[in-house]
Length: 144
Image (cartoon, rainbow, N blue to C red; front, side):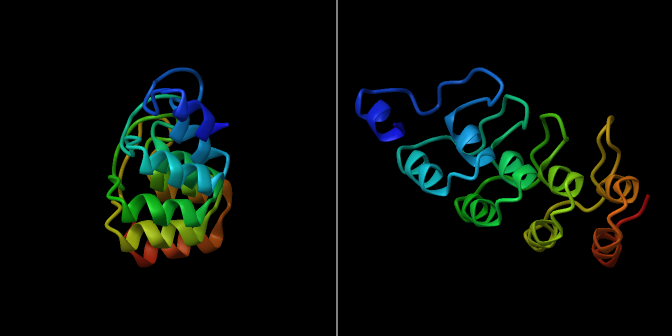
């Protein structure tokens, strides 16, 4: 469907709705091939809007590691703020996706970032009872 819509000149960066845009929806749904297709058609990987804030946050929240790596490879901002969870690291922490957390930290994510609703990634992990994730964050210098 995505290819058909683009062939009919649909704007791959059109904003709107719960998902923010088509790329965010594809990232949040784990549709890697659609993500690749949309990016190849100039979808803005850093566009803000919608529930998850941006495409990287949507992929992190859903636990889609391959999509996270692809977006980072394409140059997305790992520390971009916005959306329900604050940023990508916080979105990954919210659901205990420790492998994504480790990956984001290896790519320069701020381990002590703060959000007015959720606090720091460490606070999110502690509140959710993710002991292994707490250890990962502390090993990277996280403080409350």
